Length: 445
Image 1 (tube, helix red, strand yellow):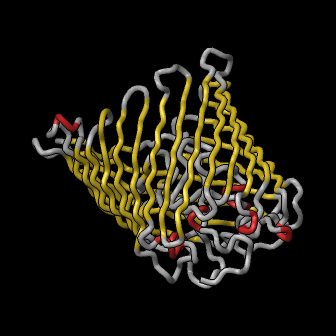
Image 2 (spheres, rainbow, N blue to C red):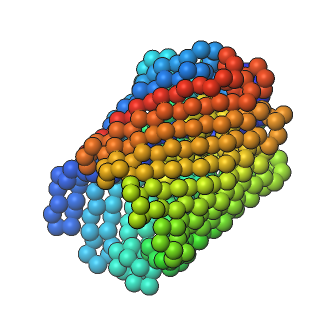
Image 3 (cartoon, rainbow, N blue to C red):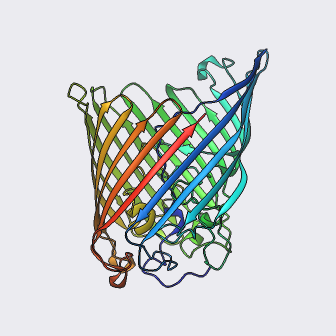
């Protein structure tokens, strides 16, 4: 793969980038058939976004100074169903397709051109659940599945689907996955085999084999094992990930070190029995042919449940060592996880490598169907020879759940880097404050 020389050429560019999508929409389905233990339902999901960025960014060297206005959208449609098997658990499965597009100038980071159009299979999996066959393991204490499906580990700090969606940009090879870079419609790993043991309380674990067909992820193959203990005070989990068999045709120099790379993480989250408190953390240690790396975060939030509009205040500190590979992370708990800053995490950097991030968040709920929030990020690059992405970002957003099917989410972002692209940063045309706006409309039936 050929990249233009940039301060970030040795960073794992693609594996750090992907779209962000609101998570407040709930899954619905139209039931076509339900008789004698057999159910078949239809799924329809549509998301459209309109974006404008006052500045462009040069992480890939494909963008020019100026502003960008673009639109992204996708339609996901398919079926899912299940079949009860007399005294032998149940079978389940799903099949869906995604049609995606980008219009206009393409995104501010130059990952799409605005001409992308693609329709392809998304979900295509089959599985079996044990129901109550093994009471000691809990209901559905054994769950086996295989095929194309989205896989999430923990809260998505390392694994949250295969969501990177580049467009038709000139990078020396064909990385086009259909565009819609920000909203990232394609999240399924192309090949999976998953064994889940245990219920929703006590000890449980997973053993998984995943293979990506995403060129931006160098079509990486992963083996994952998890062990968790779930109780009322919280969840404590251990994850082991071994990556292998990358496609050298697409791999960046950093992605080549995924061959045989091992990542181990310890994570936890919960209230510790204290009302309105939520604590979470994760520490990941990574060993590859390039050496040892690590990443970790500590987060605390408090919900003022007895206060007007029930505000929630959050503080988080995260640190990612110089060449840490964040793998397949993604959005899990709303804006700011794990794309830190709508501008920084999607177009400008710093990304979840070679950085320290202080984050403060505040959200209020004026009405049951409306959430308004503000997110502040302070970024500090650890090794500035790999690019100086020091800066600050303030994002103000709203999530309006119009009804059970529709959600509308506007965002205003203000991003101020310390350095411009000519000074070792990524913002083209100076280091002044850039204004970013977007409106996302999502519906699920």
